[in-house]
Image (cartoon, rainbow, N blue to C red; front, top):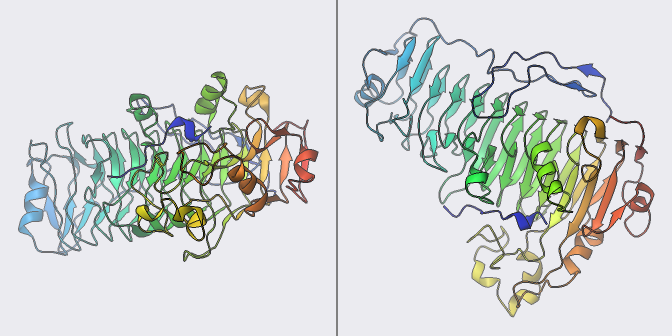
Length: 511
């Protein structure tokens, strides 16, 4: 599918009111990280979407004109879908509904179909069927239904398997499936749903050969996904997360509770653009809360980011890796005014990051560019150069290709955030306390025009990456240019870096 295979070398690859978040009462997911019984004490007041513990109930009786589906009849849902016209509403009675006992048996909706679950209605794949809902029909709606026990292959999904456009998934529970619980198409809306305990992703927002636009993910609980631990099975595959986004142009990710996923919480990877990530709680994910990689133009605001990256950050530190493995990680991503979006930069503001393993890292791999063998997004070029064969010598060494063949970490504005770190809570003494802007020394391939320190100099001093007006509480350190250059706050603010004007640091105040 041309999916990026991230290698680990790419890592080396406004104050808010004090409050307590209420207890959740969520159940734990077997095989995944344990969910917290209570959300932690935090300096940020933020409600969370507790939809897994308290799912909304569907209609107890069939709506007028709806086709009733009987759980006692195996394959009844697929058969009645096939025999009914488009724009039919189906009401699934309480109980466990089954498809025919064939791995490829699935429901193929028609345009405009709606599927409503009664209280207690479950569509169960019984570890036999690969897919629940597929096909190319547009504008399908699934509400109040639990979908579980399907065994989609790696990188494939159970609901909207073929990434059809205009689907609406609301008040659904999609849990305990292999692969991704859900795929995505253009104009898809996923609201108030529980994406829990799926083997690879809660949702895989990927569509073969066609970028996804107009995606809305709002008010969902995304918890305990990647139970199959794909990064351990295929080290460096870059193929896990609560949600993974590929080539999505225009997405609103708001009001979600993304927590206790094995790996990254939200990961936008390869030519995404125009994201708004706001009012989410990103909590206790094993890896980064958010990765924005080889992508463009985003607003990241008003998020509460708590206790992330303890597992993966500690793992790399214990190996002796000096790279600032971050909780919010921007890799070869930045603002680009030539690409149409609601912003022309990456604007990160009014977020609270508390007791995570490190903070925000801006990284640019000098050896990663379009047509380079070191480009782990194999076969992809930047949005400014549609054909990778243009990024070749000698033309790549001159304007405009010298600039346009790179995914550049540029025009990143980090301001009015609150960063709190108590190393006793995180249980660390070093390497969990860093902000960073850096690159590696360019060496590869031998025809690369980006060799040496020029990319490190550019990302650090020339590409309009700026921290300012932030509040730091705790023993923060700052990394600039390369992993060896670790700075104190006053050095970070001084020439030549001139970062964090208007910011404050209280180094001994703890969390």
